[in-house]
Structure formats: structure tokens, C-alpha cells
Image 1 (cartoon, rainbow, N blue to C red):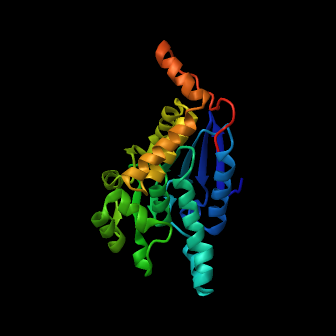
Image 2 (spheres, rainbow, N blue to C red):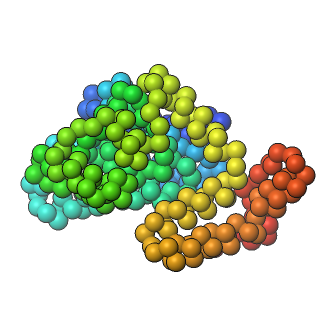
Image 3 (cartoon, helix red, strand yellow):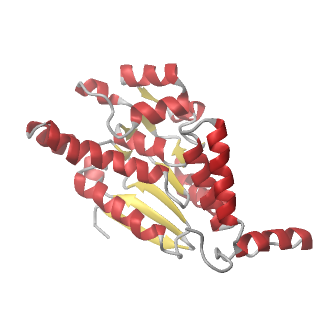
Length: 270
């Protein structure tokens, strides 16, 4: 694992820590690539059933894209900036959004720009009461580029998102909670314990069912309700031949706790 991205795995929970505290955990190209590579590895690692993503130090989760690096890309031309910065950042947030395992962002400080966009993309987020959010790209003369114009408006609604995007003003974790950007706001020293407890609560259930729900919700949001129902049915069809569904039904009938294996009966569906 790159020293820019720390990893600790304990009790099936991987804690990934953005590790550039002297730069407020700004997302340079190397850090984004390291995070993408880690997500690729952990998606097929059966020892990892949930991921917590946080930032090193007490000041920031992430202040966003590394502006010095981005400025050099812009100086080399639009094509370079689009390839190195925009495409890379959008690839990261799309990966977080469509991930097959629960990802919980633990926002321990500033979440500006790309740091806010990571929070928007992940399925879950818990914020410290010391966190601070902002969409400051407008102050640089540019729109957000990691998906912020699209995901924030879907979470918060068009008018409230427009206000944040066009003023660039910072906002509190309680306002982030009101907007639907985070699930909970907790005392700073309880951030990681609560994130772990949240992950453990989810992990009580079948990993196959968890993956199916994550996929159905994320994919269905981009379709009409009729098309979304087809996505839901498709995900049920994937889970139906699993040992986990049989175990869940048998355990419910027998009034005992279910013990899930995460396996299919016979051949895994494609």
C-alpha cells in the first residue's frame, strides 16, 4: 500500500486513510490512483466486507484536488487536464458510488471540493462535529469536476445545490445532515468507533444481499421507476440461487440467528 494511503484490516473492516495531512489530504494523481487500486483489490478480497474511508490528522478529510498539480495540467492544455484530472476524479467517484461492498466515509475535518464529492458518491457518510463542507470550485473560475454538479443536486435538490455550487460558501455538518449528504453527525472522538459500529451492523446480514441492495439502489436511481423495478428484480434473481437466501429463510422459520456464507448454490450467476 502506498504511504499516501494507509490501510488497516480488522474484523473484516478495512480502514483506508488518506495520508497527506501536511497538504490537508489533497487528492493528487498518485493518491487517487492508489485509492482506485486499493478498491480494486478489496472488492474481491473475502476478508474485507466493509470499508471505512477517512483522512489523516485532525484538520481535514480532504481539501479536494491538488490545485498545484491541476494547474500544471491546465497549462499543458485542455486534453491533458481532462485526462489527468477530470477523468481520473470522475473514475474515482463512480467507483465509490457503484462499489459492491459498503463504503462509509468518516469525515474528520474539511471536506472541500473533491473531498465533498467523495462524500457525495459513497453510499454512507458519518461526519465529525468538527467537519466542514464546501463546494469552492466556483472561486477558482471552474465548475466541480468529480461529479459534484450531478450528485449534490440529486441529494439536496436543485435549488439548495445551486446555492452551494454558485456561492462556494462552506456549510456545517448539521447542514450536510439536513441536505442528505451524511447519515449522522457525531462527537469528533467517536467518529471512527461509530463508523465501525455502523459497518458491523450492516455486516450482520448476507454479503450477497448487501451487494444486491447497493446495486439496485445505485443503478435504479438513474432510471424511471418502471426500469428501476426491473433492476430490483434482476438483483433478486442473482441472490435467489444463493446459500444465503436459503439460510435466511430457514433461520427465520426456525427462529434462530442466520449464519451467512456469502456463497451461491451451484454456479455463481454472471
